[in-house]
Image (cartoon, rainbow, N blue to C red; front, side):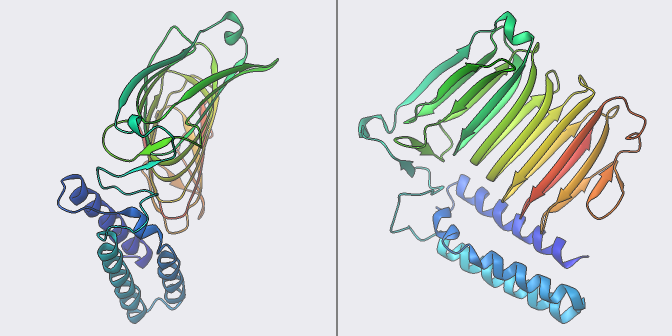
Length: 317
């Protein structure tokens, strides 16, 4: 077993166990304490690179020993209540807040944001820009409007703006960067999206931390660009266009992409210490993988993956 895959597996196991224990209130884990010691991950990566070259058993033992000690230290520090509570804690009662009205902190509001569909929207591409942090996005189903955003928000105000140019309709769904509340608990800041199936879509998503589950199989998606930090991303694409471009750049993330079997697909990955699983693909070289029908397929999906410490999985359905 390659040492870098073993290290990645241990890190994922550590994160999963901590999240599970925290979700069941066995422990209160404060991620802010972990991020204060983020250089530890650089040390782990550096040691792994040094000993990976000589491929010795002693080097592998040292790398694993340093990793276990580092994760043990982070586990200990993560359970200590932070002195400064102005940043992310996964403790259920902890909220980042930048707002003036404290009375709104615990209020859960349901908001329905939408933009109407016009004839002009069917003749030009539609660009959808999404940004925020501490959010849970779900996209599944269609609407007669151009876009419909059903939001459960807690201490936060979302905006949905529309701008029309000669060549495109631009939609921007965002959470303001100032005077807003970021809730990392299990309730609040859930966004359920529905899009119109007629237009040609370009989707740009920037997610600081959170999760997104997008079923895009029924939409004509020309490009999908994702830039995320500590995020979970699940995507499903269809075969309605000759070419679809997917670009994913992540920090510590779990990424799953599902593509139809009758579409040819090429993956180019720059993934550092990330884990990769591309079932049904032929490995062309160290960074490139292709489906067996890539050259002959009329519809093609191009996927670019760029991640530091992430898990990438591409499946064919």
